[in-house]
Amino acid sequence: MKFHLPRLGNSPYRLEKPEDVATPRLILFEDRIQANIQQMRALLAAQHLDLSFRNLCPHVKTHKSAYITGLLKNEGISFFKSSLNEVDLLVKCGVDKIFIAYPLLLHDARRLFSWMQENDKIEWFVQISHPAHVDILKQTMPATIPALYYYLDIDVGMHRTGASPDSALQLCRYAEKMNGLRFAGIHAYAGHNHSAEASERQHIAHQSMTDLLWCKNRFTREGINVPSVMIGGTPGFLADLEVLSQANPEMTLFVSPGTWIYSDSDHAGILDNTFEVAALLLAQVVDLPAEGLATLNIGHKRWSIDQGLPDVFNEADVRIKSFSEEHTVLALPAGKNLNIGDYILMAPKHVCSTVNLWEYGILVDSEGQIKQTIQIDARNR
Image (cartoon, rainbow, N blue to C red):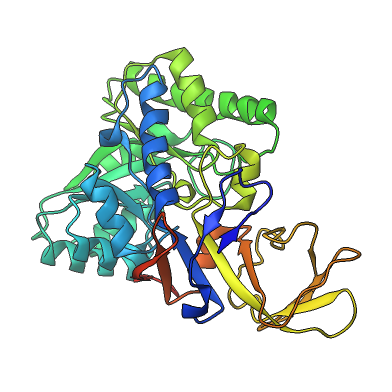
């Protein structure tokens, strides 16, 4: 069976025996996952910054999967970014380096140090943006741990976490006073850069990366070596890289986007299908409550609402009229009829929070055959 989804390219999604799948279900399309991996490789290589997968630190919050982590490891990626809730997944996958993407509170730090003591072959990196974060680490770090690397997070416009570029040097000086805490570099996450207009993304990237470079240069003038810089965020990282390519600074650069591995209808629209939407939701019509309406057996317990309602379906011109926990009611265009049991393939608006709602997904190969079940190992956290 072929599903054509407008706005997601011309190539249909194939699922040969949908009747073998209990709906609703998260469907993962293997060929599109592989295409995204190769696209990321090409995009990094296309920059004038000598980038490859050694510079990629993908965020695992999108897929939360040991299977996908294994695919990326096999491509030569050794550095992974995660929230604290996905650390156990990365530990089990045997990755080389883990960056905890958010500042640690007291209980978080204790958990981290417990993992570090049990997994001393892994290089561990944390994020700080306030003197209190240093104090927490000082209070909880065991003497048996020789060193902990940290990225100094600066706020380049998102206003969520991060020290101001003006205060970053003072914070670094404060962190230097703690024994065992070692400076890994500057982290600058421009997660606010997601405009649908390329010119606006470029403008925001210019502002964000100017702040980053100003901060780095200030450190250098003060005699502080900045070992590396980490930027990230799909879709903004491409605009960030364009700005940095023009500036061509001397630095070791890491890039840490997450959504790209699966993409979603939101980012597909912003980036004009640069990455293919690889994770979709299969549902069925469960009732026909009135003329022009069809009710699906899926609700917002299975698709996230944080970025708005799903608006890409294999049936053209349908839209969500109403929804609840277990059901989604579609309004059909004039003259369109659906039958009970009909299959609807829909793209999530925000794939990261949607994947988190599923226990597992069904991996489908390029011929539309069901290949295997993929566990969402770090879901529901």
